[in-house]
Length: 205
Length: 256
Image (cartoon, rainbow over all chains, first blue to last red; front, side):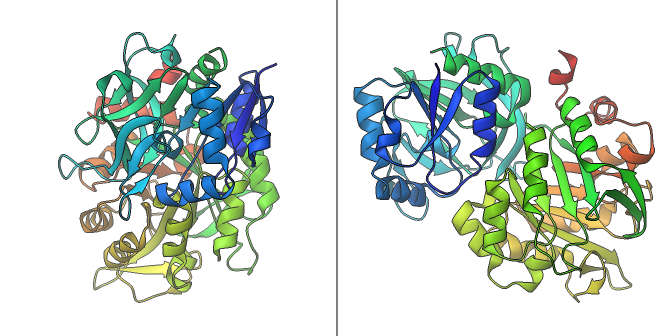
């Protein structure tokens, strides 16, 4: 069994993530409370919207502490998608500083266009350049396009957590990893075949 | 490099897909579900689905229908038509829309764009602006091109960006369905007025038109309907044509 908890904190399209997980051979189950994290094999944290709002909602449902317990101490494999990756950082800066889950030391900042040709939000298909040994990207050619839609990006304190970058706004971090914790800034569930390969890789970790 | 998206637009009248000329003379072009399945198979960059009769008939979006469509597509889906409230937006996102397009409501419902951006994030808030050329320049029309607003499109786009819109879909009413090329002047005005991505709509007849929308109009993405409904062109073919004109497009997926 590959039971995947998809965290539901009432903000986003969970349908497409659940369907993508099923398509890749996993069994999705929506998790709205700490008890929903029992008896699962891995967890996905999706997310759109604002950093502060998402953290408040996780904390209202006491999911922040439960996730830290299960993932950081219990080594439950974890994948954060889009805002779900950004929440791994120590600090968000949207509308003033606010704390994140803090599993990976870093800050989340607004994308800064290098010139007038770069627009924010960064929307559409762009290349992902993974580090050679990144397990999520097994079987995915370097510079494969994935689908992005975001205005903020994560900056890591330590380079060893960075597993992929994308050439936009000076080159931002598009994937991070620390132990069995993974994050991707793009949407694998909306990235067609390469996205499914990545999700299958996660389900095999 | 960020690729220029080619986005098929599906217009729905409550029963079938339709396509008109100048927001009029609608012709039936087949089943929506069938079209979505074909585009899913072709792995297109992104889809736009607009239910054009909802606002006029005062009905909310058909959430069950969108749910069915979303189940067929693993690519990004923008949904519009009849959206009047933050609850409508929330339900559309819940059933599988990735972004919601606001056209009439962006003008008529004060505070809606701000509310959507604050609750769900700018990235899912697409504002759709339809405009017609006038002697003075361009004027925005709502209600599927029927109601004149007296608003200037670039100015409206700038205001809606300030309120939190994440993208702007700019449609030319008189170019719609003509296959005669986008209104480049309209695109230029809007893309200079905002820093969010601009999606060109209305008039695409070839890869050359799409390249022009990017190079001269400043568009980040190009939408087309008649081109794909009434000619032999496919999104892949026009993307090859755009690539030959130096436009970055996503081709790898369909090559493999």
